[in-house]
Length: 99
Image (cartoon, rainbow, N blue to C red; front, side, top):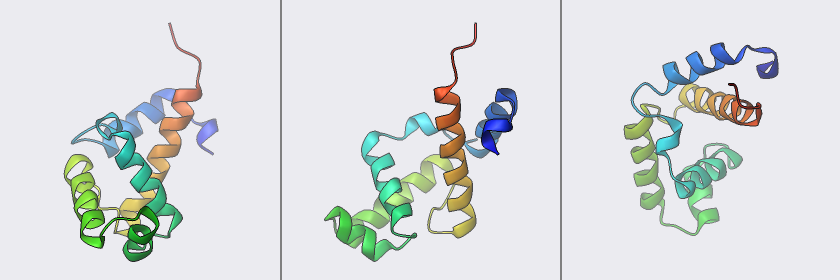
């Protein structure tokens, strides 16, 4: 479905989702943490074990993401919005440059 959307609508969606800070504000470690969190079905304990970090460290990272983006990934609705935004961002990154 995403690939059928006009790029202008995708840009508007990303601006709406990331009002506080763009997805570009997240470093590679944070994006890796998010990816693992999604792979573990939003389970904090399993993700912290998989990342070999203390549970409180993961909670701190998730709070940092919430502060930067306004989305709490521990909440299902926010996690879905964030996941779709990542897919939209990937789609826009794969598009040829506009001149």
